[in-house]
Length: 348
Image 1 (cartoon, rainbow, N blue to C red):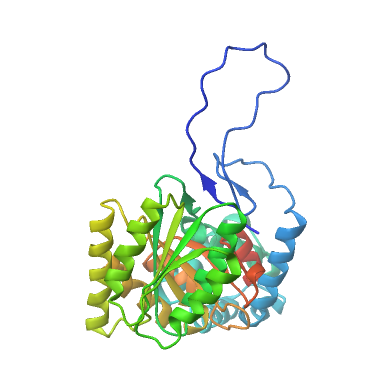
Image 2: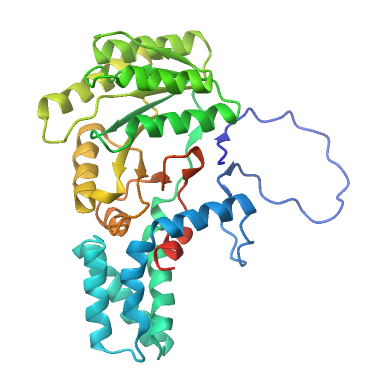
């Protein structure tokens, strides 16, 4: 289970004490298994058992994508045929033309610089190149800087938006945060009921109106969240395709109305995308980012996909941070994104 870094008031200054032992480690907040602090160039410690179980699930989920790429490195030599097969495998994994070209250029350069002679070395070089490409997508979700932290969640129907909100609510509540849900998806049948189940399951409050205006529900929720001292208000919006312009305009309206309830809100605008949709997911990120100004992504349904390379395409063409990735329906199947873990899992 991941944790969230909450900014807290600085403690009062204490009288200087006698130095004893080595200097303390830099302060940071714990999120997932990573400490939010300056990068340590030493070898990373082995992941905790719970995190290792997550990595194993991620590797299993990405096996279809990874096996297609790993087959490229089963030969006995590094030649043009290997690079051509690698290019095809990356494109088939929906890495995208630009990201594929970037990775191939990096691999060729590092192979030449290192003097690598075996295909397995190329695989390791590719893992490093992919990690560096994905690294800018790593970013912790920070709550506690605002009260409440207002998180607006969008996504197309079927991407797992409401379920992801439920999982996120569970983890937030489990970390001691008080959460208020806004059932602003008033278009889809049973959407309110689905969110209400999550509210009951996690013992959190929900603001809901049958047939109500989505923007009005969002306004009421943010106002209630401030009045009740909640830590987080999660706004579930209606699923829509980016080509449905009238519904995209509704999203803009929700954002404007939320800002009337709290001038600094929404503090996070998240898009839930289905990892199985490949390049279509990249198109969604671009469209929703242009409409709303996305601050983060939740990538779902990576289990069993052959298109896991789409995160590389996103990193190359629209590097919106990936806060969480999911590989199943269980609560434990939603976790924080780590570029190195993902790259190794993809090529396992």
